[in-house]
Length: 141
Ligand SMILES: [Fe+2]
Ligand SMILES: [Fe+2]
Image: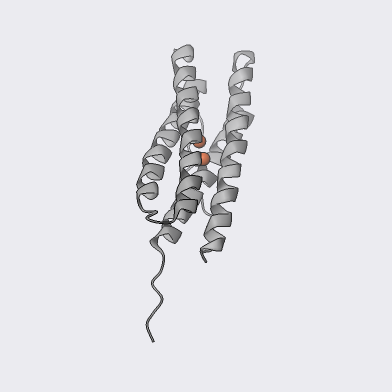
């Protein structure tokens, strides 16, 4: 009996889910821990970004389930602590890594245009997050 070939996208989507779980937690905890009146608007940006990452995790998990995979529950390393500028820099780094990752996974989609479209939409959000964090960094300097 021929063995069923495992779809390589399943592991890649789980890699993306792990990245999203990292971002969800990192941004929400930064939202909680960032102190000081001047950080009110930044804290709100962290919170909003965290919720958007949760939506990414949701659509990724639904797609993974459809493809026959089981979504991971494990985030990657979560960067905590430091002042507001360090938090923003850590978050910008995470977004930049996500952008590289999504571009790589999009190339793996082949004729799976549903997954590709989903990933392209997520990528656009990550690019927006990166540019938000980038402009916050220049304000904080
Ligand atoms: Fe995301
Ligand atoms: Fe993001």
